Image (cartoon, rainbow, N blue to C red; front, side, top):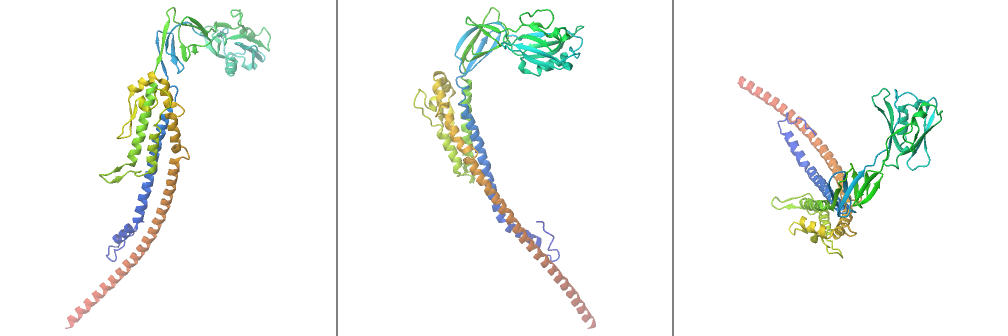
Length: 469
């Protein structure tokens, strides 16, 4: 509360006295503020631990990722395709010839001088048969939509037809043509027939859009510009046909993406083990664990030299997180040659509790006993499962950390209410002091004025008496 200027009339240091009184009365507020700050620091520290624990849990879950352990790398000596491998792939070398790429069938209409001129005087229906389908799919066109633009829009508006359409301009005197392309490559995705019903056989649209795959070069109607063909490859002497240029599991666990034919010279595909993803997730796991340990240690430490505590010095919850996460790593499988983390090259530094990773030893373990490594990390009672289960006790919505911070948030609200009520009480008390000081100041000023007046009068009387004598 702002203080008025008092003490002017009396000459007393009443403003200073009032300020000192406020400082003395405000000591409870300082205590409440310090308690509030301590609780806020604890909530913030718990949040820091929670973030580090979530990061460690995520790193542990990555240990259970099948794509990390047992990954394979591919190397190609030549051209014609790219390759990727899953964990199901087998190490080996393959000689591959790409003899033919899969193509999409393309049909074109004859040229017109306008793309917006209607080609029928009535509504019509295009009956389209694609692939192995027995029954034709109807596409009904209103009379005003029987333009090249209208037909293309109607076809593209129904993806289930299995074809796409666009209008192209070839720059000739009759430049506008409708280009119809099969949605799927290969012969099974090709158009087998298109017929037109609803108008006379002599109409322009009927003459332009009839098609029969048995006579693709027939006069009039749509012309087959590109035949839909399957991809043809040879793997180690075995001929393989595919409706797509993406060939999956012709070699188990391998996906080939064809891009060009290879001619008579085959391309060699080599499949090898790739332990880099596994090494990466283990390194990430070790780093996340050490970070969690550092976070807890720093937040619970006590500086002897400065005799200052950290936000969570002596906090049992923080120490429990540290201890239980350390215990999750104490795994010993009951079978296999590799049963513990130390056999994989992961050990604990006794003085700090940090994990140390011997990447060379881990790489050797992955090479010699990949199944044991996988079981230790992602098995039923493996590291990933143990860490995830224990961390959930703290991280879930009604877990230990949220319960603790919820209680502290309630405490904060109580402290704030107490601070507000105490501050109001102090303000009222200081206002009462101020009013009393104002009255005192006024009274002393009045007494001083009377004293000055009397002094003046007595001085005058003394002067008069002296003059008479």
